[in-house]
Length: 425
Image (cartoon, rainbow, N blue to C red; front, side):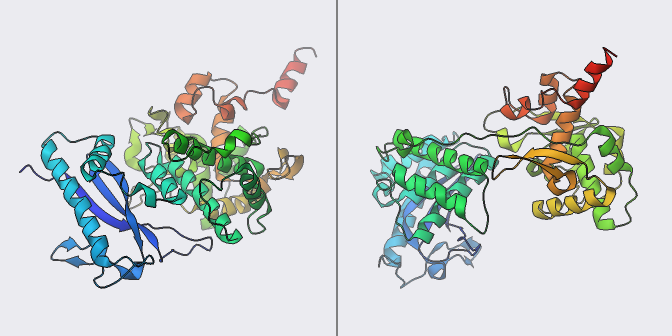
């Protein structure tokens, strides 16, 4: 028999409730088949509790089965559930033996499993959230996109739990969507901007389109429910003088000095924070940073290449970290908190006009109060947009063609107006 080039694992869903605590009761059991850099997740048709699941190692192998003489919430015995898991694993083993050296595609494997079992892997037992989870796991989307989809699913789950609702496809009506939207708007713990809510609803709409196409339901409530479009104000970013003031400032506070280095280097690289914290020194090739933007991996596999300026290299050469990080990274939340403190410390407090994300009304605020990681990316693009061609900037920033966010930089500003007046003085 050929060398084993695949792996079968059974695992319980890892999901947290609205309080951030891991849900440990009545959670789905999934089968994960890993092969050729692919992962296929299949719902086994059963649920159980964490304390009834055996994931211990015995003689070098994980058991990954229900504990003997236990029952799940539906009163199904461990012997029945374990027999189901063994059947699924045996079917997968048979498929790979039959294929020999030629490994199947993910879609082919999924279809062959169903054909061999003469079923749709307990399709009738899946509820709306099981299908949502399956949609996320099976889809060929970027890690960033899947992260947002999982967040959308959890928002809907929290809504159902808070309202005491059992949400099914049939109960997802335009009226329910309206109630869900009001719930997102009125959450006192974390008020969400209208753009954030529009994004949540858009991702939920994508799931319903998928469900209709897969014949999981005939109902798509979004056919009769419109989503308010996302609206963004003009991008606010540092001037070259402000960036260089920050770069050169004497900052005795070691914590703020590290945050300054992290921010200024991001201004010279221009990537999103999620990509930035993954960069290591081995991403530097011939004086260029190379990376594939995670947000657009499923749309655009082009590698971004950014030449490192002398100032950028000076910051990188300050640090020699064990994991090869360019600079000492911190969590997103602390980064944004410390940036506001840093901007105030160095005096970057000029008044700027921004669109309030909650009210969508323009307001004047000090620059330091809205400092955030994404301002570094905006500074990178904003300082280039006057003199550099769109396609050159996009090749370094990872913006997709015809990006609405990208077009926002191409607007007449006060500097343009001052230069125009000089021509008639």
